[in-house]
Amino acid sequence: MNVKLRDPNIIMKLSRLGSFHQSKLSFLRSFLKEFKDWDYKRDLFNLDEDGFGTAVYSFSKKERVYSLVCFANRISSDERSDRVIATKWDAAFTLHDGVPSKQDIERLRNEVPKQEVGRLSYKELTLSRANKSVRIFDHVVNSLSNGIQPDLKLLESVGYLYRTTAVYGSGKFGLADRFRVKNREEINGPFRLEMMLVYLVRQFTFDQVNHVAKNKNPKNAVKLKNKICKNLGIGNSTGLGMAPFIVNHPTLLNNWILCRETALKKIREIKKVKKQDSDLFKICVRSSIKNITSWNTDSEYQSNKIKNLLNDVKRFIDFIENKFNFEIDYPFNEIYLWVEKETCEECIEYIVSIMMEPFNEIIDPLIKKMSSDEEKYFIIPTDRTVKELRNIIEKKYSSILDINFEKKENYKKFWFISKNKEEPRIADRFEETGSNLEQPLAIARDIKTLHTKLTKSKNSLTIDKFLIKNSDLRHVVRRAFIIEKFPYSEIQDNTISEKIIPIDMLRLKLSFFGALKFDPRSDKWLRICMFQGAPLPN
Image 1 (tube, one colour):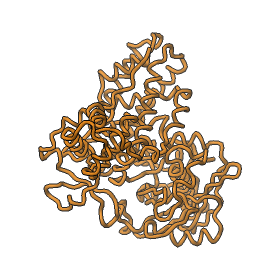
Image 2 (cartoon, one colour):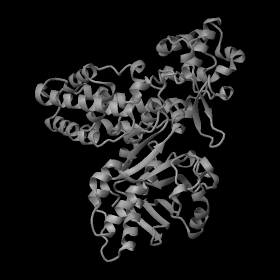
Image 3 (spheres, rainbow, N blue to C red):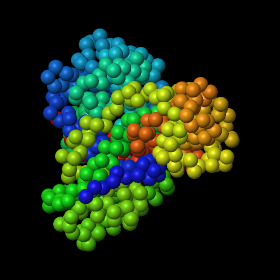
Image 4 (cartoon, one colour):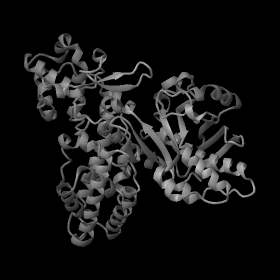
């Protein structure tokens, strides 16, 4: 049986991409798998009785060492903000390449807490900052110092002690450029170093809360139980800064989605499923109800999605337990067809993620294919013709060509870079100024413009000649030649429409990171939890 890969025109719509969930392919999970046999150490823990000071953690294997350098700072409550424009944080972190010397630590103590205003070196790989969830942190300190464990219900309602507000890498603020580390075998997958930083930050939060509690009441204090630590993650506040990434990295996006689609195709093509695999799948679906029911949000939009997801997953459980026989041929194909027909987009993609759980032999080889050497595909083949390019667009962007950009609602928004923070933002073209500074993120509109110009050009005209007169469309000419080879490289939707929900773009990327519990605070930013349920480093 040969199952077709799913149609990019369906899968690459924002509402579908915004329904993706973490899976075995997520970077967080593949990072944990790869680093589980590395040596973990707490090399320095120099905090005062209130928990402020310096700490260093490391992962090492053979000759390779990565060190997290942490600076916990004393700040007042009015200085604490999740906004990207904040200038002070409860803690700041950098991942150092190797073992930091005393001079390195002094240099970093001066620069890291300043974050974007500071200057780092090629020895530093990633940079981050985080704020306490003060209510939760203080509750845990008070409970532990009195010799009791904290209220699990309260902890479950938030899921973390700290949340990060940015994680930077790849040459920003003087950090090491990607070319310095990209050939290292152990960090071959995307965002490995960012995952390592966040994972070690999580451990710092547990050590800090235990340390403060112990100093508050040395006689009676107890440590936070490992089981409770395991059920806490690291929160994260993510805004629009992340959205353009998936537009600006088409071949990388393709490889992420293609691996996911390939996994689904191969699972649907399994003729006879072993009992232990079908049992594990059923256990995973059943136990995942806890994930859905403990997912809190004030967002009406997300609450409705969760409610629909919960209803559909319960119906699905009834279906596989009472009406379905796993001994038929190609059972996962039948399951997929049922889910696609009977449930919402959120549930379809949720079940697709869970289908991967039993099948390491399918997933592990795909994890190695999720990076991309993007420069390889940057050159435009200028000897190709207008006719060839037009054919690619008509074949690959058929739903985009149906959009009428004469209508105001279809070009109401524009993307720009904020002067204050050099971060992407989205605004209303008809109510706010600045559309003359629009970023080239309106791919649908620009593809449509390109197609119109191609239809007025001579079929045999070569692309170099076409671009002499249309150099403003170079970015979409390049994309069209990329999508010819990479079917999932493009969002098949309008990113400047009145109806755009930008958090769909954020959720797509965050699902591949391995995030849980998406909690939108508006249509432009959301909170998530990472590493909740993950093993502790020791």
